[in-house]
Length: 326
Image (tube, rainbow, N blue to C red):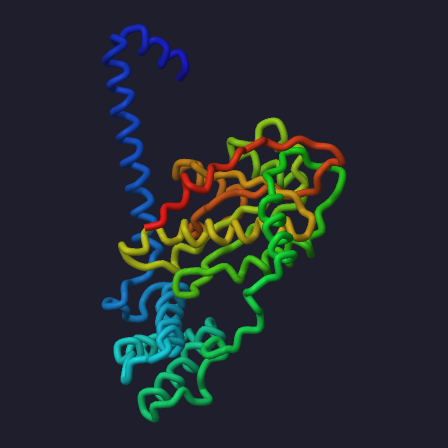
């Protein structure tokens, strides 16, 4: 292949070769975008006005979660409309009528039914009654106003997290600390509370080596990584053209929270981007045992640092280049 490319470069005029290369790159972008769209169409849920209860259980979960969260959001307003939610009520009822929902999505079914009861209380009696979901009208238990000392500590916590590429390969990670980091990250906001994230964790050296070999940004340190996590999102929990990019947004937010969760427990991490084409994603799914309907967001190398190590300087942009007050 390399010889063919070199021969082609020698035969084709330089200007034409460059022009063809540009066209090929443009075609490649269109091809990959089209493959992304086809995946979204294949696995994604129906949009609101087309919801029929068909598709996978995850697709039904997508709609039920969207709609019970709509009720919760509505009842959390200072002055909710009255009545409201007729279309939402109809969709939730249709979803709950799907035979397998009660057995396969028991918690979602409970949340949906509770939200329906709360909606009925509000629309019928003009009160938010006892059936309201615990996530609605729940009292805040955290005072958002921090002392100057606490604020300084918090700022230090965020600014002190850095990507580490020098791991102590002899020290095994504590999986329980990673579990707690995932638990912390589950509080990450997501579109309509769908929480589509998944974390595939590998801690055995052979598995780590096999998985991390698919990523092209770990040269020089990948063989020292004690554990690697693959962050994915379940495409079945997103619907329609409007949400074509939402899975990447939700997945990125979760990955950030996960990284800070690791940092809070003394675990070092390096966020390994997954800027790869669809065929590379297919190979990683096959190698790591990841389902076809999961989109890969990124990999995270995890471990403990050596006693002495260097980090990339990675200077931060000045605030005024980021913040524009309108």
